[in-house]
Length: 139
Image (cartoon, rainbow, N blue to C red; front, side):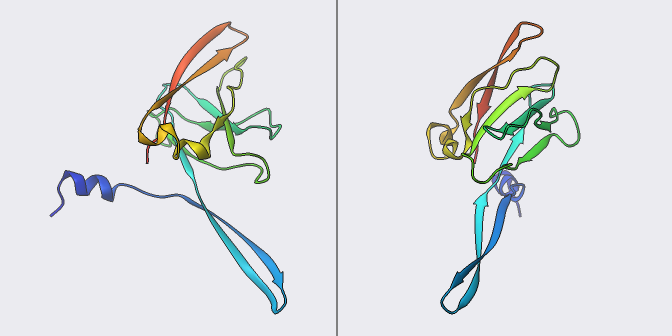
């Protein structure tokens, strides 16, 4: 029999990134498999939000649809494994400016790991508007 606590555990899922590369050594070569956590972005702002990796040079980001839509979340993928794991966000509208860099990999280890909120300022330079949104990290 499942009670409410068991049901919430059953609904959890884990996204894991995998990277495989050959590693030569004296006796031939081995395959090195590196597993890393993936992050899922859920947009509850009511409008489209884009994300990108800081420093990747991409002008456009990956869309995270509003939570009211069927595909309301996005699995965070790093565009360049050699760059720091820093995330930038913006509204998916004309004139929106990218936010400052957010150290996503530190979120689960730092102050946000226990549900503390981080406030981001999203600006639209064309409209001259400023919006403050909350970022909450959950395990």
